[in-house]
Structures are given as structure tokens and as C-alpha cells.
Image (cartoon, rainbow, N blue to C red; front, side, top):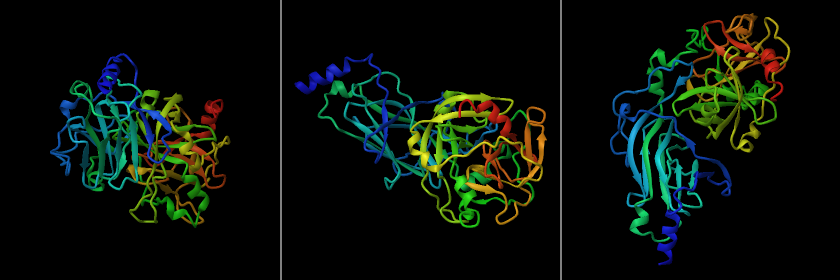
Length: 428
């Protein structure tokens, strides 16, 4: 009787706000954020895969349209209909062979206090925990979860409470209504040119100029350890589950930089996963380190003409160890040698700029190149691809950022760091 009375009392608190807190597995239960609201998607246009309990089949081709804002598409969204727990199976396995990541969306997330959900890879090495609020919340709860690296997500409801009455069970429910999955290497290779577009306002292409001289960041570890260390400060930005740019830490505070054409509002930042340490373990290899993932948080400053967005991240303590970069306040000289750490085409961190003593073609071609404004850019022939938008361009002499990459076309170009510093110095 006491259980029934307690449950009914909880159900009476319909108007109570109850954002579901999420905690990182192994983080000693420390709260590090809240569920993030999903951007609206017309699910009638999404393909619906077959049974995902054993292996989620891929049906048809990607429904993702080419981006018109310069972000590279690195995945697609598929429709699902998966109830979980409270009369449905408590565990679901969603597998998309060779997908680079799996990201679940919940149309409903109403759990009894004391219950919690985990979304993890098959080994449990990468795992995210989502707790019920202190009291039962019955309001809207459409949410995206953090992605799981790899091709399989295991989602499980863990019961922490006692026996529930049928009346209580009728008010509870967890439901997965869609999933974003990362393209396989083959799908990425076959992606039409329209999916690799630069900022739509220019028509320029992010370009490999001649032979691709970029290499895995780890290839620089012994021959150019400073460049390798600096590359750790960049992050792969997964925006709205399917789009990609590059971002990087600037200064010692909780500050990140990317392009305005990647995103421009706090709402966009809130839907962006920020992946640090997404790097190959060996030069030329395929194994990668498991990235450290945090959510974007607030946009502090943004500008279309100079194509920058300055933003913060949630759980900043998790990413401080990867270091930060510094804006160069001096205008770079013509011929100055450069290097560009980046995530081209969604790949693990690569660095453009030839290994060894010479930077090859990766050098300043002009320090007064026209971007969105006359003379706003630095131009260079460093190799970039779709997804490199927002990368830092560093001087090999000072190891400071001299430009924020945003255009291709051979020469490629980035907004001058001395101009950025004048606009951002009060935030740094």
C-alpha cells in the first residue's frame, strides 16, 4: 500500500519540471549536464530500418540533402520505433555495420525516480548514463543522447525502484524514435560532390591543391612534436547528429572557435558534440583513440563577415588537458611557413604541411586576400577538404594561429588572426 501511495503521489506532480540529468560512466555520479532538446525533423521523410534488436538494416539511400551552409554531411538520420522497459524489453542493441558512430533520439523519456538509462558501446568502454529526475516528470521529453563511437549502440533501462502498479506503468515510458548513424568509409567516398560543399555564399571548394600532403597527426609526433602537441587542441564538431566542422580551444578559459557558417546560435551550440582526441593511434593506421566528448554550450560572439563563432562547452574540466592555442596579433608575412591541424571529411586529426624541414606549398601566398571583406584573409595552398571549416592555421615559426580556415579554391584561405583578436580579445 505504501508503494502505491508513493507512486500516485509522484504522478500527481505533473507540473513539476524534471530535466533528466546525465552523468558520464565512471565519473563518480557527478552531474555534468542536462538532456539537449532535439531540432525538429519531419520523420515522415525518414526511412525506417528493419528490426534493430539483432542488426539494424540500412534501407535505401541516405535521405540527407546537400548542406547549403558549408558543413560537411557525415551521417544520416533513420526512423525507428523502439519502446524500452516498463512492459517492453529493457535492452535494445542497434547495430549499423561499419558506421562511424551511432546517436539515439528519444521521443519520450519518463522514468520512475531511481531508474536510469545507459547508452554504451558493446564493450561498455564508452558509456553515458541518464538518470530519472528526483520526481516523476510527465512533460515533453524529446531528446538527443550523446553519440557512441563505432557501429553499435546498446541501450538499457536499469530499474532502481520497487514494484510498480499498472496505473503507474501506464504513465511511464522510454521510446527511441530515430537514430543518426555516421557514414561508413565507403559511403563517405561515394558521397556526391554536393555533400562536400563549402560556404554556400561563395561557391568555393575546400580543396586539395595538387597531391595531398596532409598526414595523420601522429605521424608528426617524433619529427615535429610541437605541431603534434598543438593538434590536440582541435576538436571534431558533430552538429545536429549529421554535420561536421572543426573547432579548437583558444586561450586558457572555456573558449572554442569555429566558423560562423558552421553554427551561429547557442541553440546550435547546444546541439553540437565536441570530440577531442579523435586521432589515429599509429601513422597510416586505422585504429583511433576513443574521443572525449562534451556538449557545446553558449555562443559568446559570432560574425558573418569575419566568419567566426566563439562558444563555450559543457563539462570544461574534461577537455582542459588537451591544451589550447593562441591567436597571433601580428599580420603574417608572405612566404611564412604554415601547418593546419584539421578533421577533413570527418577523418581523425590530420595535419597539412609537409613533414620535415620544409612546409612545401603550405605557406602564406598573400596576407591581404579577399574573403567576405576586402583584405580580410590569408591565402595558402595547404590541403583541406569538406569538414576542415573552422580549423586553425598556425605559423611554423611562432606556433600561433595566424588564420581561421574557411575557404577553398586553391589558394585556400582563412580569416586573419590579427583581425579576429581585435574582435575577440575582451572574451579571451
